[in-house]
Image 1 (cartoon, rainbow, N blue to C red):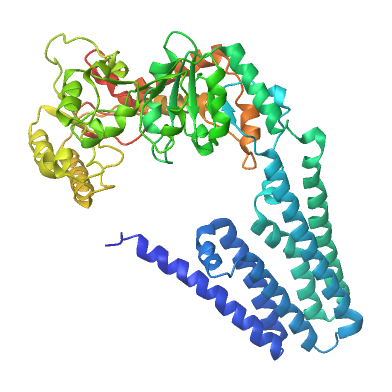
Image 2 (tube, rainbow, N blue to C red):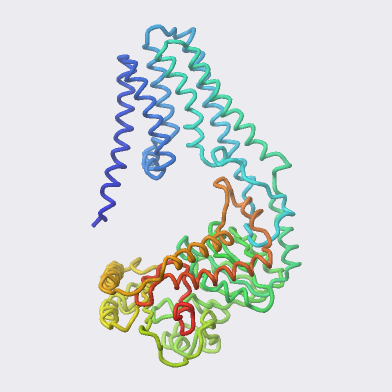
Length: 553
């Protein structure tokens, strides 16, 4: 069933679309009669509504694009109806006054389409064959991106630059004085013409980066100077970045020169704060620059369709390190035999591969433990505080949807119910990010568990941290965001981000680590020791909950 807030939102969205169609109808009827007050009001309201929806509800207008009623068609229809209305209004001479206005309006559209052609050329000229981060790419002559309304927002450009012409033509309709329309069209022509000329300057040699061949030569030179020894390779969808992010701290601590290799352009900004150099190879042809580098080892935290492409490089040894282990079939995937080695946490994972009999030789399985858990302290005795903190972090249901893959479906509610019934237990519930994505039953059970925890918290009471704890968390959050938040202009493109995300400062990285640790301590200190928690965010290190950590003090 749709959520409670979804139905009213859909009603508002449909009402907006019907209102636009009604305004088109009103503009048409009032233009044919003609009835000037309604004609002017309908045309102005129609354009205003389209601009509002374009900026605030672009997804809604995309539905109109699917039926070929996109922004260009809508604006052409509006302008045509305005011209029809001017033809039928007494006091406006069709040949002496309206014809020049019509010709000027056509010139505006010609410049609009010309500007769009320039925008396409600019975007193509700024799309480099690779994307980097944490690498000094100043030798590539990178420049800031042009304004987004000129280069990437043709709908915004058309509607915004049409405002003066529409206002001028409507003033002509109201006053029967053609010069208002001429003034409005002149302003629109100046805007679109000036914008096109300004955008074209990004095609000049001064603002153009090196060509693809020179970029790849630069990369080969950088690889020769950096001399990478081990890389982490990652490819995936928009929600899968956590699989790579969990290995960042381990990768940065490795001996040698680490490197992160990505395949999707958007993934460059999905990787969390790190000082490890990042290179994205969108096309497989460019990736083979790694073959001539000093890179000898590549780690793979996840299987992906594009993984087979990098496995072709014979000079690199490939190891599958996974992003987590469980009894799901994905933890003994037959694809694992494509790697030179499979690194696992311990004997249970080794046995899992052998029992599955999928072709992974036992000699190729290497037990390396789970490096991310290295900060955990050895057992030093039972908790001494009033509450024992219990972490329940079930995995998801897996691609095959087998209910035995996750405890959430068959046992999750019983586990949580028993833990919540113990007055001496504080529960931390951390479900897998993909819980419910394959089996609706898992998603439903997950929601019921969350409801149980919230209800249990409502029945508990105790001292809460004072306002100084919240203030400290807010201060630490602002300090961390100041160091790690990627503050780019809305107009920034890949090239501009590459320019701004050059080689990191060593002192800056130390400051990030210090700010992160301070934030973690403030985060857990902001919760009362008796309150159960539902953990879904990326921040909030659970390792700090061990005895002696900030949350235990």
